[in-house]
Length: 143
Image 1 (spheres, rainbow, N blue to C red):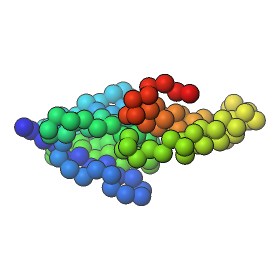
Image 2: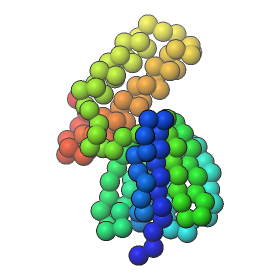
Image 3: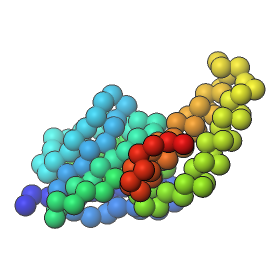
């Protein structure tokens, strides 16, 4: 089976560094599916989204990624992200706290202010993490 080398790095750590069958993720200009021998590519990564990794054995794994860029070159896909977590690593209690903090901050701000926009981005990230963690746990509903 053909493979592509995947590297996913954040400022804190390297999350993934291995050969996989394929990867899909949301870029700033749409969804990408990357297979072995993909043409060279450089794109931004959406503010908050999910990457789906299909392993060489056919199993798939999802993870949260946000704010960064993706590069494909010489059969290597590198995702450099401000934040990234495998679905199984997401702490739902922490996510709920972050969501509540963002909602509280947004409540008292002008909707056009920089602070509001930052809080809104934090809320989107928290909700994306929560959706992914609940999906993995088998509870697709947000409460």
